[in-house]
Image 1 (cartoon, rainbow, N blue to C red):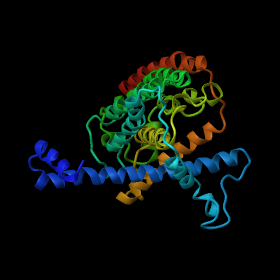
Image 2: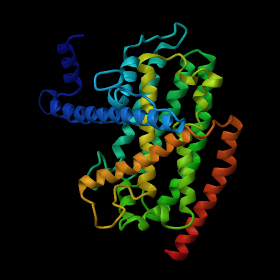
Image 3: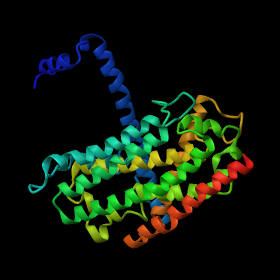
Image 4: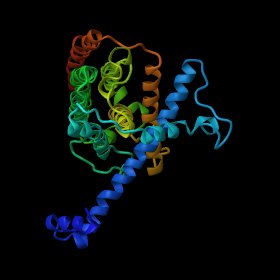
Amino acid sequence: MTVDFIFDLLNQFLPSFSGNGFLLLFAMLIPCLGLFGFITIYALVVIYAELKVSSFIQDKVGPMGQGFGFHAGKWGLLQPVADALKLLTKEDIIPSSSNRVLFIMAPFLIFIGAFISFVALPFGESIIVTDLNIGIFYILGVGSLAVISLILAGWSSNNKWSLYGAMRSAAQIVSYEIPAGISLITVIILTGSLNMQEIITYQHGGIFNWILFDNPFIPIAFVIYFISALAETNRTPFDLPESESELVAGFVTEYSGMRYAFFFLSEYANMFVVSAVAATGFLGGWQSPVSGYLDSPGWSVFWMISKIALLIFIMIWIRWTVPRLRVDQLMNVCWKVFVPIGLINIFGVSIWTVLFG
């Protein structure tokens, strides 16, 4: 397919492509490439942090090196880069008995769901790609693409372990979306808005004005949301869809190379998204902990990233500390513990708001 042929096709669907069309194309392409670069760099940093934190917890040193350009670089900083290059240069194997189209589509579809979630995340008063009126609802909605993608990956592989992992994942994510959504309803009740920026503005005035400290019911809602977020991102102790001791590698059993890497890039991207929602809804978002100090646009980005990094660190800490749950325990915690407590929380927050404003 030649370049001229591509331009002819574009001219048929976009008559002004020769003029403003180019500007429109670049206006869409450049932010997407920048966002993809940010997600990639962030994933490398978090992978390195996970290697070091897990090593510290296990009383090891983790990736090390003797100097720049030797082994994994100074302090092992190049280990995530080496891992990424290894995956990108591996042979891309597609099983002959698989559904080829769906098998290829699944890893990219799950990454798209994580990628477009970043559009509604605020990093400052004016540092946001799109300030949506239904920001939280949008993020919860596009996050559901992960369920479809994982089912596609498991079914299209034509492997029983992949299918078992996909079914577990669908049951787990769909179940834990309910307590996560219920927890965020308490935030919406207090702020009266689905807009991420308005939720952050409501928390203006320092750390004690954060929603987390608004009333006695909110810390419970925050804990339920955070644990549900672990389940939605398939993080330990809720990594049943990938449990290596039971399902080989779950829904990624038949994947290799770049497609395999996309699944885990999506997992780390989703960790960032759910942590950003938690920081926005409960921890003041990009607001400074001390009202009136260090609240310029540059500091806004720093506070938002710091809060997200703290929550991701806790996720990593939990992964290397808590053992994996059984499937029945996983569902019992959701339906018999989190959902009832979450519903009681909604009534508690509503009554508190009516009584105390």
